[in-house]
Amino acid sequence: MKRLLSIFVPANRIALLTVAGLLITAIAMIDWFTKPYLSLGFLYLFPIIIVGGFFSRTWIVGVALLCAFLQEAFSNLPESEAVFRLLLSSLGYSGTGLFISELLRNRSITLGYVEELENEVKLRRDAEDQLQILVESSPAAIVTVNMDGTIALANQAAQQLLAPDAPTLNGQPIGFYLPSLQTIVQTQPPRAFRTTLQCTGRRSTGEVFLACIWFSTYNTVSGSRLAAVVVDLSEDLRNREDLSLNHLLKSSRILVGAMAHEVRNLCGAAVILQQNLSQVPQLELNADFQALSSLIQSLERISNLSVKASPSDAAVTVDLTSLLDEVRVLIEGAYRESDIAIEWQAANNLPLIRADRHGLIQVFLNLGKNSQRAMELSETKKLRVTTSLEAKQVIIHFEDTGTGIAHPDNLFRPFQRGAETTGLGLYVSRSIMRSFGGELLYEPRPRGCCFAIVVPALAMAKETEND
Image 1 (tube, rainbow, N blue to C red):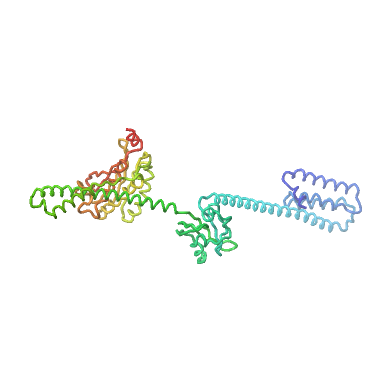
Image 2 (image 1 turned 60 degrees about the vertical axis):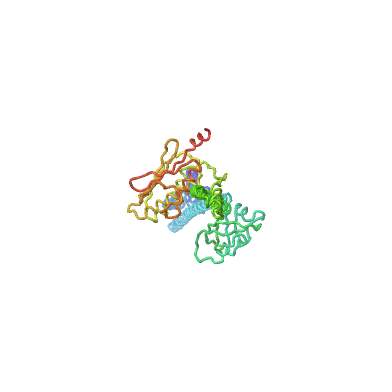
């Protein structure tokens, strides 16, 4: 039947309908010439089957009535039952043709549905293959966990992160590697959820690492599962702490230098006073005066000690555009909370500079915080950041609408009177700028305050080194 139905395709329509017409003609002529006692009308079923595969229902009934009429017209059967035979023949031929028509229509619908399912299966298989490739090629560790706490699937990155020496992670308890996920599995809420956390992880070797995990729960036919993306933050933590230590040491060196400078000034005055007093005969042999002289000399030696910069203070090539974008992200949140508007007019084609990237960020943040404090009581609160290129130098202006600075003469001196904290912020900031050939300047404005951060462009820095 399947092979028979497969011939009813549009390409065979003309040929099969021609065969059906010839069969009807041949059966009618044989009936007419032979006039057998038994009718050959059952042979009309074959052309009716062919017609049922292509014609509409109306045409099928019409061809069936034609075949029933030809059967009755050319047969040699008694005429007393002609009407009854004509009715039965018409019903039989029509039913056969309509049955074939519906059978082919259902077959076409079924084949279309099967083709659609095959396409969906193929698309799903392609999506699964692409997802599998994405998961396996991901540099982040990806694991799925059953609700009993066992690992259902793990990609190659997860294998390398958690158990590089073990044959496979599948089927192993997640609690050994990531105890926090085990706790989440055991206390899973009734609904699906997703979040992130930082926790301690453990490798199969027993080594502990800092893990950042993005995870979510989802439902499957076999039950709920947890999917997690795990990243090792140990190296980032070490780098961040080393960087913080380096900046702490650098700031400490700057502060020690500032303290030594102030001590030298005091010692200079004390030395002059001691020399003047030593000319008095009564004090020259006095034990207390001699002890004071020794104390002054010791303080002078301490003040002359210099703190050398470490090799890590060397400047590197910095993309100033991306650095300003990072600074904008860092300060915009705090400014938004203080209802301060920020106007950024930084060019997109700024040249590369040679600077201490993290030190430069600290300078920007210090200026931003100073401006924020200065605008707390201002009616108009606005910080304007602009960039310009002048004489192979990049100049970044921080201009605010704050209260301004009444006495800028001693602005960059440490331990100023009247400063809100220690008075070291601008001193340290300028020292950081000068450590890699930059400068921090104050530019007077009729209203508010403006600081200029000057950094040499990379081409200018290379020319200076060559000179």
